[in-house]
Length: 306
Length: 76
Image (cartoon, rainbow over all chains, first blue to last red; front, side, top):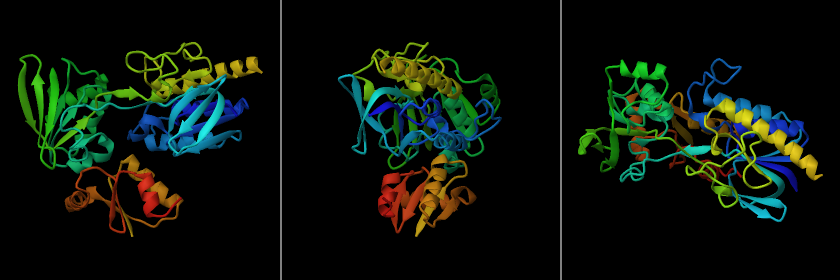
């Protein structure tokens, strides 16, 4: 029986693990990998205390700091599939078939990429449809590509593609871009980039590889097509809350509702922090801080139970 | 033989290489950005355009498929 099981190995999970270990809470942390969603980022410049670090290095730093703690059990390479309430305690099961029992659970499972959910996307995944611009941008050398999504991730995908693609269409649903002003300027002034506003993507076409992208021009309701060899999808994220969805209250976006003072969820014994929670700003630093709040709250809770 | 097709900043490529190092697996790295023909070769072999592509004794794995490559390399 554990006092606490932490679900996830991003900045929130690792911060929680370090604090829990230092409080001598009997803790297990279960993570598929370390680093969270920033893992694929080429350069992070706002992780406080570090001027510049790649997502991969940040993941390594987090893992190293966590493993330096003596009093924590770590299960890596495993995903938590389900949390079940069993009387006053919880049973946590993984995709490896293991089941662990615990008094409290902290969900820091983050979120995953949202897909466009249009015809052709799944069939052409990897065949021109791409989700990791830092990984795959160089493969699209001298090709015309589309990036779907005008938030920060979309803008960064455009920046990643600039040295390689011959032309980039940035396809945005609304009438303005949402990402950082600095990146917007960089993109808008580049002759390779054409921004298409008010566009709803309808379909991705191509026989063996992507050949075009069909969209509706929402101002005129006309259907239009772009000849492209690649489509990078950057349309936001979905919280990974499935494992507790029957136990805790979620908002309409699927985020776990938390008390922002303590990170407690609607279910006694379960806390949540980071992107899986209904925190307004999805940021590494905030996730880490919120997870620390959660552990301190859990520490008080466990002491009261004892 | 183990061959891995990569791009320089691809994190899943780095994760795969770390995995090989951790398990003492010798591998050959092919950075596809050094020559366009290498991209061709990778697409031919894997029928797709994402990195990493890992070739283990003729078997092709797309992405850092930890379970697949563990099975092929008999790592438990």
